[in-house]
Length: 225
Image (cartoon, rainbow, N blue to C red; front, side):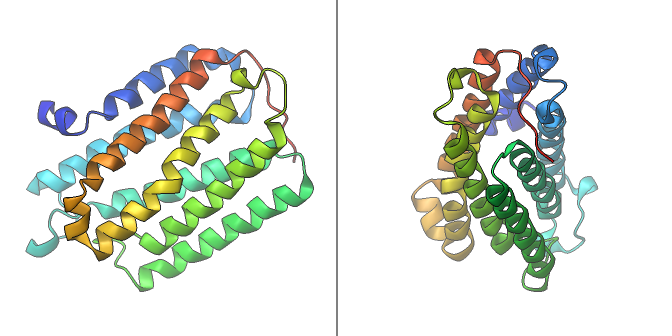
């Protein structure tokens, strides 16, 4: 486990974020953000489980020597939960009906892509590259719409969702590019140390989450049905 944390140092930020999220829980427990700690816990569990599947034979899912390390099913399922939670979050907090519709139909496009992608990439041994790329694009649009709606508000420094959106935006703008390079041109992925860039993006995203919990004030975001 020490080696795991050494190689995946960013997971420590998951723990810090979770602690802050729980300490501040009374400030947002009645809002849509109340499910956020569950997402962080699920993220930690997925990372640890993925580590055991990748590095320990007793935990393998794919019983082929060539792919015995494959843990992608864990993260492919995780992507579904991750994207749909944040689509729901931004949809619920959107005031403009047209913007809500954009997020709604964008999430449906992602769902269709997630259902189709396994026909092109084995869900057990490959990341669902096409679906996750579409998922990131839809999430970027959702974050942009929320920023557009709330950027001029007073006290935006204390808006937890703005901080969360900022972190998601930083990560999802660049991660699909890294994923595509990793899949289609792995030598370049290694040459340019894009794995470390990926880790830096995770750090940046979770630092935004942490700042959000530090600066937030008790509030109930406007939720529209």
